[in-house]
Each structure stands twice: as structure tokens, then as C-alpha cells.
Length: 412
Ligand code: ATP
Ligand code: MG
Image (cartoon, rainbow, N blue to C red; front, side, top):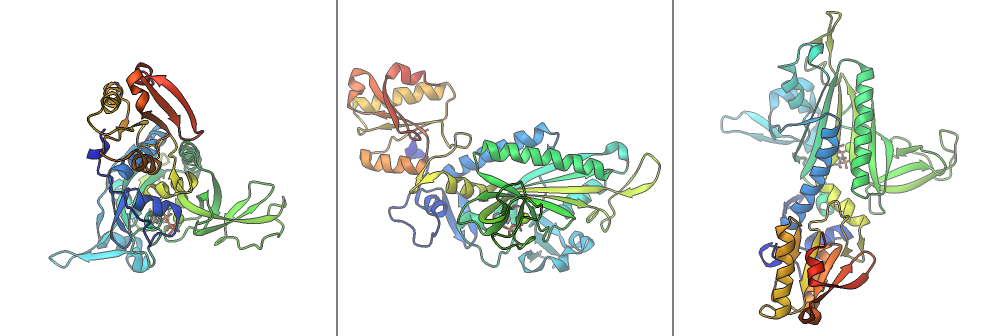
């Protein structure tokens, strides 16, 4: 891929309205563009990363037997009346009227829609359990959208819903999804903690959040210094230094970014919305549900917060927009530039995701921009290209070694 064709509108100066590193990088590096407060365009570089994150999520959920679907963002008021949330959700619900003055909302979450979808086709225990998910834009009219993608009014979420006949089966799904989340966040190279949480607007009995540990996080985590005990401060407000409720160790505080939230809903939606099934004993019972979210667009920021050094980006390889970046030091028309393209074409032909900085810019500009693109493996094509030699650079370890052009073509 030619960098000149990719549309990466980098900014010369540091954007003034960005307060945290990840937001600065996303704006300065040409990853996102603000439309209005809390609403963004994901430019090509960011969208490549998003698709990588989404695919990791898909792989781990498909592995445990979940199926992907896509529900409408535009949702009828009648459904939200059934669950009681048309009145209760409050001002965060984006409400709109159509030309016939019928009322709708833009989905902030999809419990109502999925419950209605399953209700109309599942009536017997023989058709259960089910686990259905989607990756889609959600709308929440946040009082204070801020930190770029961290708290948007339109943002990308993965939401999964499970439907069980017994609480034991719900527990089993909950456990499987929890493990899938662990796999996902491990593959994203994140440093995080699982904490007990308040169930908020979604409701249900118990829930846990996945918190990426980070000083700029908006949530406060209370945890024990010598056991697994960890909770959102909203649920368990203990002073630092107090004994841990599980009797092991003392309480510490840390800041976290909520990237995932898993809930045992039970019958919170199935009862009012009449999602029933006939069990093997011929009795009619409400379906027992779970719901599980991941903040896909927020994750980009969480990953960046943990993977930048003084605003120099280094994407974890699992989500890196490219596998390798080629940087010709010389301008177009030179032998070095031609050799750089030779390597690019050979790699691209093998299906390697390769970016070449073909722009008519100085080496200094190219190196600075490369630190915003954040690809770990870089091939620098300089003077020695005439002798058939290029430099292979590992931006993580800063290890540099000379290799031949032929070796460069065979790198992956
Ligand atoms: P928060 O407490 O941060 O407002 P929430 O608890 O209301 O989030 P959930 O309903 O649990 O959010 O949504 C699932 C996931 O979607 C969250 O864990 C978070 O990662 C993401 N998310 C929620 N709200 C936003 C938002 N306004 N912008 C970006 N991501 C969000
Ligand atoms: Mg939450």
C-alpha cells in the first residue's frame, strides 16, 4: 500500500483540545476526525486497527459457539415501552420522530430488539441455548462526551446476548464468555483487571467489568494487594489501607478504563417482554438471559495509552495496521526508491500487509510520521541500496541490522 494513497491527514501542531496521549496521537496521526462533539470519522489507519480488533473478538466468540448477526440501530418506541426503559433510560437515549410522527430511538444497547427477535421464533427448550452477537454503532447522548473515542455519543460496541433454559446454563455461558474476554484482552496485549461492578442501566443481578489499568481512566478500582478481590468503587467504597473484605491483604486504589462489561440478566427482559419457552416438563418458563459488551472504539484508546512512549506509537502486532513499513530515504526517481518498491511489490504479492512511504518528503518527516503509524518492523532503504543492502529495524527493541534486498523480499 502506498502511503500517498492512504489518506493519513497528520497535523503539524499538537491539537490543543486533546488532553491525553491517545487522543493526541489519534488526532495528530490522522487516525480520526471529529464531526461534532463525541462523533467521529474513523480514517483509514484507525479503521484498519478497528477491523483487527473486531476480528479477534469474532474469532474468540465464534470459537465458543456464538453467532454474529446485525440488528437495526433505529428502534421503535413500542419495544422500549415493553421493557419500561422508554421512561427509565433518561436523557442519554437519543429519541427521534419519523415523518408520520412515530417515535423511535437510536439504539444505545440492544436488549429490547434481540429479545423481540428471539421471542418470535423460539418457543421450545429444544431450540435453546443460543448466543447471538453483533458489532455495531451505538448512540448515547452522553452529558459530557470527552477524550475522543473514550466517551463518544456514537461509538462502536460488540454486544452479545445469551439465552438459556436454566441458571446453571447461564452460569456456564457466563464462564465461557468471561474466558473468551480474557483471551481477547490477552491477544490485545492489555494490562487489565476483572472487577465486580454495578449493573447500571442494563440491570440484572451481577456483573463484572474488564478494566484496563491506566492513570487517565475514569473509573476507580478498589483491589486487594494480596488476593483476586477487585471491585469498582461504585459498588464497594473502601478507603485505601482498609482490610480487604475477603480477609486477605489491604485495599489499594487504581484507575481503570472500562473496556468490557458482562452481566447475568436473568429474567429482567424476558419477563416483561414475554420471552417464554415450553420446557421438557411441559411448563411455560421465562428464558434466562445474559449480556456482554465490549467497547471496540474505546479499545483503540486503551491500547494506545498502554502502547506509546512519549507519543511514539507501537501497536501490538495483533492489531498493527501493517506488518511492515518500508521507508525509502531518497526521493522518487532515485535507485533507492526503485529498490524500495521492488521489496514492497514482492512482499505485497505474497499477501504481506506492507506500507511504503512513497511520498516526496524528507527522511526526517518520514521518520516522524512512522512513529505515529506505529508499525514495529521497518525497512529503511538508504544509500547502501546501490550495493543491494537495506536496514531492518525493530522499533520495539531498537535493534538494527543490515540485510540484503533479496533477504528483505523473503522476510515473511
Ligand atoms: P461507562 O460506565 O463508561 O459510561 P457503561 O457502563 O454505560 O459505560 P455498558 O453499557 O457496559 O457501558 O457498555 C459496554 C461497553 O461499551 C463499555 O464497557 C464500554 O467499553 C463501551 N462504552 C460505553 N459507553 C461508551 C461511550 N460513550 N463511548 C465509547 N465506548 C463506550
Ligand atoms: Mg458498563
